[in-house]
Image (cartoon, rainbow, N blue to C red; front, side, top):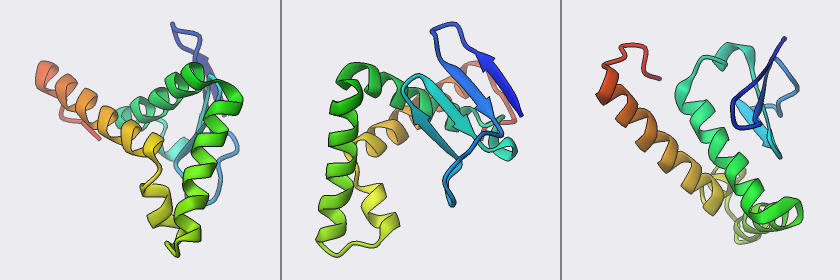
Length: 114
């Protein structure tokens, strides 16, 4: 278990409690990831987008939008993973994380891109 503080007030906890089937979770400015994926730039970038979303919408606003979207898709008959992938916050985080890590790799030529 390792906890580190990043320069923008974000705390990353490697080896902390993560829901089954997930690689990581963000709660406010805390990013919690499984030890096995702690080195993934894309995952950390994805979770940092969620930190920004929490900051922009606040605790109630973020949770209402996130869970409301998930429940809407579940009530329409979508299974868990399909509903999760349709949450606008997840779509945004995935897109921005892919874009940002791809541009980083293009700049520095990192062969460990994940």
